[in-house]
Amino acid sequence: MFPIRVGRHAEFRASTIDAASTNKYLGERVTLGYLYMILSLLCFGSIGIVAKFADARGCKPTAVYTLAYGWSVLFGAIFVILFGAADFHIPSIVYAIALPFGAASAVGGIMFMTGIRYGKISTSWLVINLSAAIPAIGSVLLYHERIRPRKIAMVALAVVSVILLWKDKRAEEREQHELDSFKETA
Image (cartoon, rainbow, N blue to C red):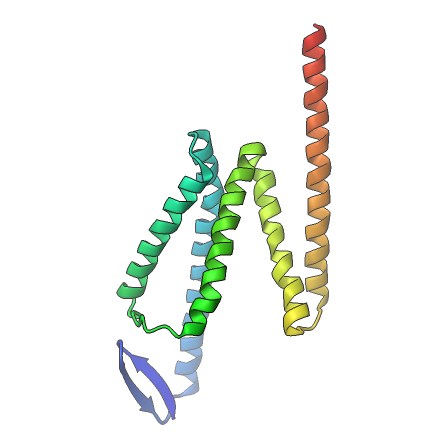
């Protein structure tokens, strides 16, 4: 028997489901998954632009992110209610996981926005993307996942990108210092 969820609470069981309809269902889920990933990419990508815009307007990072997380709660609750998953009876373990996750996310966002004040958005965004190396390393250490060549290459490229960004920033500061020295002598 294969359970199929229909509506919010109803469920029925179908004893036979043919392979063609199963494959079509899986294809639709994969396509929908890609759509979600693209929307996620666009939303997360816009965060850097909006953060730099807020900084250009003189907004304090803590105020912007506090308000942003307030809106996140509101939109998240509306999303959950509208799409039928409004079961707010949450096991206590979820709180133990979600509270530190939320705190780390808020602090990381505030630190990112504060960092944008002192650097270029392109550099800041590349550094924040280095955070992908942390789950990769953590998955190996905590969950004993196999180390694959792709994961090794990802972490190595992340380290190389930080080194190149650091060198680029030093060269830019040196050029700015030389330009300032030239203006003073002229």
